[in-house]
Length: 425
Image (cartoon, rainbow, N blue to C red; front, top):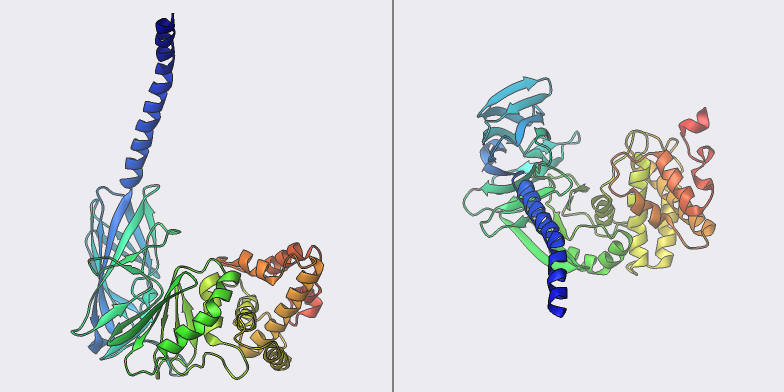
């Protein structure tokens, strides 16, 4: 009886075992399906200091026609001399590339110098070094590809003798950089980069691998910056926990622009910029807020993005104990006085006076959220909720603030915001 019972038990398992085997087979097929939809992209950048430019060759390697077409948005003053396999078709401000079925190559020349109206540079390529945005190497592109297809991209530099490189990306054993953006199907290099005779200092702070780099002899205070971040970065990541685990800070002296500029997982800081200004704020922390939140403004709402960045530059300093509460109060008073002359917050680009007035708005919003929620919420919650948004608007900011406050926020009423379109209706 016992033997017959066991035999019956084994028989009853057969349908279940068959179902499991089928599921494993299906999972294996799905894995292969996903793997087969990865195509390889290799960027080879050959730097030419004499022409302040670089030649870029992009190689596409795919087992089948995963990528049917690429459409590059071309800046004719930066990207020229396109050549490639397959078909190249100009289309207004765009260039359509239909590659061969199994891939091919396309090449162009990229100008890596950028000069502002005031004569300063926010991108340079000279005889001994280069500092520029990786975005300038490869034009923005959209792809028409097989559903689920995504790239695996590598970046390689051919440099003059004695030059080295640093980018926001990890380096493979081959010396190539692994260009990876999980939120994109097509990966192109972005963020700040430095080439040439450069010095680099590394440290791991608050679980973030930080590199500070700049051309040798340009006065970049690498150790000072790392020491400053040891004081402030733990507090910073408690407010903005989505900061990436790698951060590159590059800098140089004149004739580079005498300020700070953010980029993906990286920022530029002029070598002469103080880590803490006389008014008690910090350009480095201001730009770091932009890096961590990666938000951009809808039309007329730049004051929100810039106001948050400047407000948290002040907040991180006082919360970390880097500056005293008294110094923080004095800084807010100075900013408040400066911002009184701003007659319109809703301008296209927020300058110094508009940003200063926006800081006062942010302070008032924070106080009112804390009061309305009995301390359960603050402006920190709003800033985190907005992180990653590409079109931050006044309406969105106001709605989030009121959600966390549990009711209306007086500081954001149209009548209290100079230049508000709603107040004029």
